[in-house]
Image 1: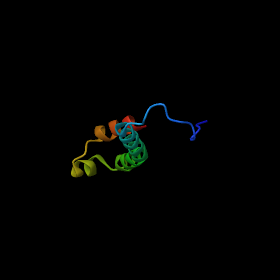
Image 2: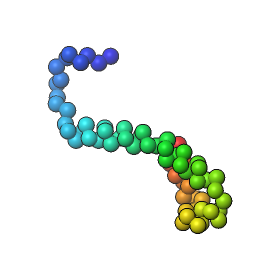
Image 3: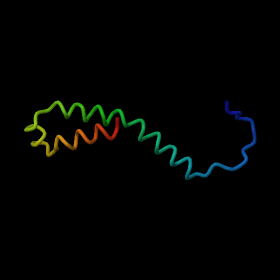
Length: 66
């Protein structure tokens, strides 16, 4: 697939590596976000209101990350 011994034609820019690292971190926490939102969606509307959370915000978050 990739030959690690082949010479690189263009150097990898540090910004590219940082962007890739950030994307991988976001991808890794995505399932945690969905899991947390699903847990919150099990609460009653009153319990959510006490926490200052709208049910529609939870639904939008789940849709965004699925």
